[in-house]
Length: 233
Ligand SMILES: Nc1ccn([C@@H]2O[C@H](COP(=O)(O)OP(=O)(O)OP(=O)(O)O)[C@@H](O)[C@H]2O)c(=O)n1
Ligand SMILES: C[C@](O)(CO)[C@H](O)COP(=O)(O)O
Image (cartoon, rainbow, N blue to C red; front, side):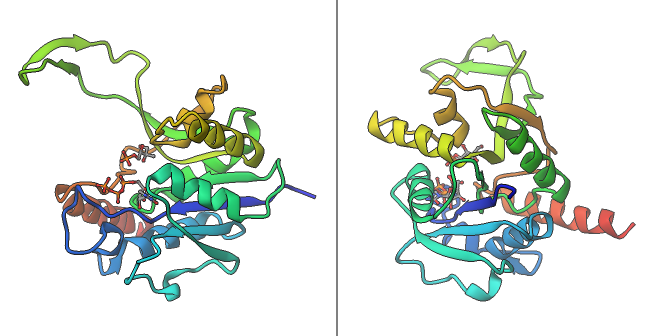
């Protein structure tokens, strides 16, 4: 029997940096809430996956009609992103070698091709895999007064994106270790690296933007419109 693919979508954030009247995953882009767009993308690529959606217990905006997956469950979010993901891991009845992909709800522009590539890599590499993109700009180290102290080498530097995918047993071990040592990790790969594993960097599209600041809304809308246009041609 082949391993099940689980899809954890942390969607319990408050969107503080967005500063909107409601959490950013409920803001509308090209006519639909970000959460609905992200779930539709994920379903287009991974219809066989079992979805675990992390939502804040006080969430007043979620509508189950936005979930296209047949097999899915809701779990409570935690104080930090890693707590939300840990809650999801603890709630599911997965086998140790099942593959778990974690994707931010705030990344609605992820492509179907990248999602499929990442699922394959997560199955292939023992240390798991993450979508990532090489740093393109010259990197500056800030000094205390806000001036540029020096230029850092960008050789070998990548931006970590999502999804990130690992075998269930490894991810439980890694995030459990981070929690035990009170280490706050902002992605799953950091926790896995801390155990000495080396997740595979899978080069992803540069338009897999994480909607974080108000400026990102117009950018994400333009990306979605361009992607829609490309898929028509
Ligand atoms: N306690 C939390 C915090 C974040 N997230 C999710 O983790 C992803 C990445 O987080 P980020 O972009 O930082 O979202 P927010 O936490 O909502 O934003 P901010 O940090 O600006 O408040 C998002 O999909 C967010 O919903 C979560 O599930 N649980
Ligand atoms: C997981 C992530 O999206 C990878 O870029 C990112 O680390 C989320 O972190 P944030 O600090 O909550 O934005």
